[in-house]
Length: 124
Image (cartoon, rainbow, N blue to C red; front, side):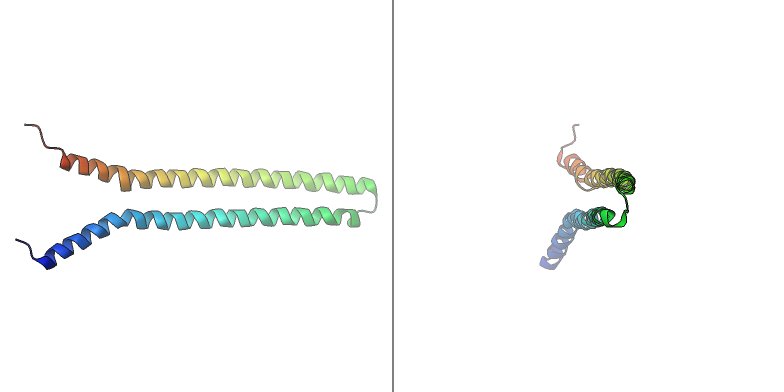
């Protein structure tokens, strides 16, 4: 027969085991938030740099032809940068999705399968 203290210890251990996946997901969520926020911050900086450069073009160019050429070159460079950023977002989404899927498999699906095996009476 177990004592009250032993039962409390068992309950505490079960709670710890049950909450471990939640802690893992919380850690993952914070990491994902940080990565996405930093990516957004970098993108906003790129957009700001482009806008400022565009605003300075009319002042910096002496002739309309020079203005147009600088504007086209600047816009092309910005478009290439945005293409790179889009690829980075796709890669980040893919990585976060894969990590989330593997965590779900490890922390939810596998324990559910184990519990089902234990709960299912064995056929004789």
